[in-house]
Length: 180
Image (cartoon, rainbow, N blue to C red; front, side):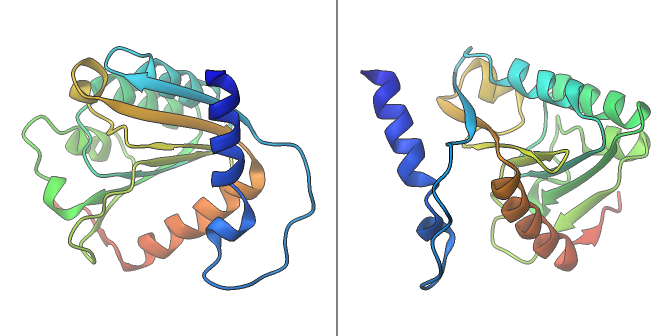
């Protein structure tokens, strides 16, 4: 029953009308994206992100509100060392997080931009290889995995990834390069 409810919720959430600001042609019917859902605390969200990053072959685009997870930061740096192009956008208020990993990413050669256009740049998104989207309420933090009540979706869908990539690019255009 629970799986049916989750599948139904995902189905309605990802209908074309959810993404439009006005009327548009409906997408032809097709299969639902392959998806996995995780919950925290201690529900495997960080491991799911780590595994997705480890499988990346060409690119990882990140939008992060809070970023203190050493596990995720290390995985991004390792991906970059494997030749994966990694780019990060963070919220302006979080660039100096006490336990933040942004300086580590920058020192490792990963381009980081700061989104100061909004009161909060509250996105928590990764787009991997233009075909996988990781999103949800889950912040990229140790606390989100160990203590907080969060959710994480991993969606394998190139059309959805393209929409998220355009959203990422819009925010990248008005973001400024990270300066410590």
